Image (cartoon, rainbow, N blue to C red; front, top):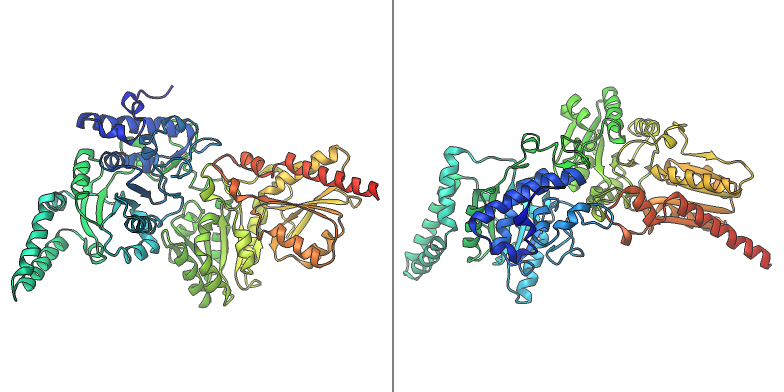
Length: 632
C-alpha cells in the first residue's frame, strides 16, 4: 500500500521543488521521510543516512539548477532524496534490484547524477575536476560536493583541499552527523554564520578591503590587522582554521535539519564566489525514532521487515566474517605479535571480537585503506604480524601500497579479504571481483576457502611462523552453504570432490562458485557425461601436483567470480599451454561491463556462472569435439 505522499507525488523534477511555498517545503520533507521509512524497510537499503539529509537535499534543489549545477555525493548512499526529487519515486519499488534503480548515483540512470559514487573520499577531487572543466569551457553553474564527516578520515579529501586554488564555482558541504551543536557556543556561532553568510557581510568585507588597500602606507597593514582580528574571533568561537588555511571561506556549523534556514543560507552563498565550505550538522536517522536511537543499526537495512533489522554491513552471527574474527582471536591469544587492522569496518569484518579482547593490538584507521596497508607494512617490518581485514572492493584503493610497500620487501602482511566475489544489491561499485587478478599479478599467494573449516584452518596457518611474506585469504559475504560445508577441510591446496578416474572432463573452481560447479556436474552426470569437480583452495600460485593432475583431462572448464582479464583461469590456461597441454579449455569469468545491482543468483545467470550455463558450455564443447573427430 505505502504511505500517503500527495506533495511528493507531484514532484517530477527539480523545477517542481522550486515552486513550493515555505509551508509546502516543510510538508515535502515530512512526506519524503515517511516515504523513505516505508519504502526502504520493504526493499532494503541505506536508511539512517538518507533520513538525516532530507532537508539538506531539498534545500540544495530549491537553490541550485540541476543538472547545470552539479551535486557530487561522497560514497553516495545518502542520495535517495536526490533521486526522489529528480523523478525516480516509482523506481524505489525495485531499489537495488535487477532492472531497478541503483542505491548510488549513476549518470547512466539520470542526467541529474553527476558521477558514480560507491567509494568514499572521492567527492572533493571529482568536484574540483568538474569545477575546473566548467571554468575552462566557460560554463556557468556551481559544483557542490557533499562529504560526510567519516570521509575526513581518508587522505584523499586533504589532497583535494590542498588543490582548490581559487575556484569561484566550488562549494563543499560537510554533512556532520557525528557531532551536536552545543547550546552555549552554538547560538553565537549561528549568529555569526548568519552575518557572514549574508550578502551585506560579503559586500562590506570586499569594500573594506578595496578601500583600505587604496590608503597609502597604512592601508594594507590596517587591512591585514582587521583580517587577523577577524580570524582570531572565528578561532575562538569554532574550530575553522584548517579549512580557511586551505583556502576556503568557512561557514558553520548550521543545523542541517532546518530546511528554511538552510535554504536561505545557500541562497546567500550562491551570490558569492567560492571556494566555500559549509558545515552542517544533521541527525542520522532523523524523524524515525528507532533509527535516531540506533543509527548504526539502521545505516543499512535488509528487505522485508518493519522492525529493527540487521544492517547488512554488520557481520551476521553465522558468517565467514564472524568465523574469521573469532579464529583470529584464537590465534592472537597464543601470539602477541598478531595485530588486526580495519578501515572503518570493524563490525562488517567481524573484528569487534578482536577489538574487545586485544585493544592494544587493534587498529581502526578510518576510511583510509591506503594508510591501512602501508601501516601494516610498517608493523610487519618490525616483526609484528598484521592482519588487514578489508572488503575486496575497498582493497582496490590500496593497490600501489600493496605493490610498493608490502610486496617489494616481501613483508608478512595477511590480507583478509571480505565480501570476495559477487555481491548483491550494491551494484557495480561494490563487486569483489578484481582482487584475484591484481594480487596474483603482484605475486601474492592467495587462498580462497569454500567453507568455515577451510577458512579457520588456513587463517591459523598463514599467521603462524611457517609462512613468510604477504599472504591473502578471501571469502564471500554471508554464510557457508551446506553443499560446501559437507566437505570440511582436508588441509590440501586442492581437492577432487566428485567423479571417477574414467572422466575426461573436469570442472574447476574456488570459493562459493564451487557450489554452481557441483550442480553443473550433477546435471551432466545425469545425462551420462562423466566429469570430475576440482575445488581449489590455494588459487595462486598453482602447485606442481595440481598442474600434473589437471593436465590428464581433455576438457577443462574453469569458472570463477573474478574479472576475466588477468584472472586465475586465464593464468592457468597460459600455464597449461606453455606446458604443452592441447585440450579444450573453457573459461567462465566475470564480464565487468555487465555488472549491475541484483541478487547473486541473478548476477551469476547474467555472467553465465550458474549451473545451467556451465553445463551447457561443457555440452557444446564436447559436441564440437565429437564433430571434429567424426570429420577426420
